[in-house]
Length: 260
Image (tube, rainbow, N blue to C red; front, side, top):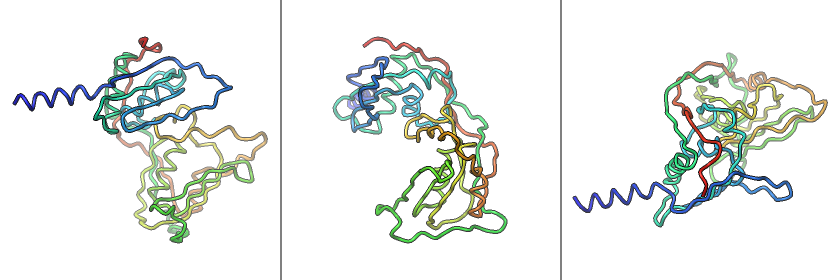
């Protein structure tokens, strides 16, 4: 029993960082921007928002989080290292402890009906191009690229993607969950050209592992097709509905962290 208690105590201690530094960011335009990184036993988040940190700590997408707007605006430098034996999967729990200690973060989780979209097959059936084997990235995954269309809108190109790939990509673009209900199991090449009308704004993204919001369109750009109309050209449909999802509500957060 004593051995078990000792092991339990070590496990509990391991859920906090051994060394950490937290301070408000003072971005310098002359310095190159460093991407946030997550290692085996450490995190190095440069010029990040608390929204980003909360998304990492609790494994939530932006559409699953609710809190004051400043969480997406104020930026911080957070560098922290776990003790010996730390595993990468321990880091989110450690980040939860750090946020509670340094920012006095208080949260709760509940179920809410969230605006979503269901991806289905149209009445006339799918009009999809089967992917050639060589279009896959060599590791069983799809190739996904975004570029500007000739009309000044957006062009999404997916090579060797499943319907799950398309649904996940649309989730990032729309800032709301897209659920695949097509029943299609193959791999396809998709090309979608659309306007930014329904794409997610800055308040719908910004979490960990999420694509950044699209840059503003060039002056005089054509509005282009709705993304929903563009999907219909593939013989598919996006149908809006609300889905019950687990969400994170931020009840309290201090803008100024406790000093190092």
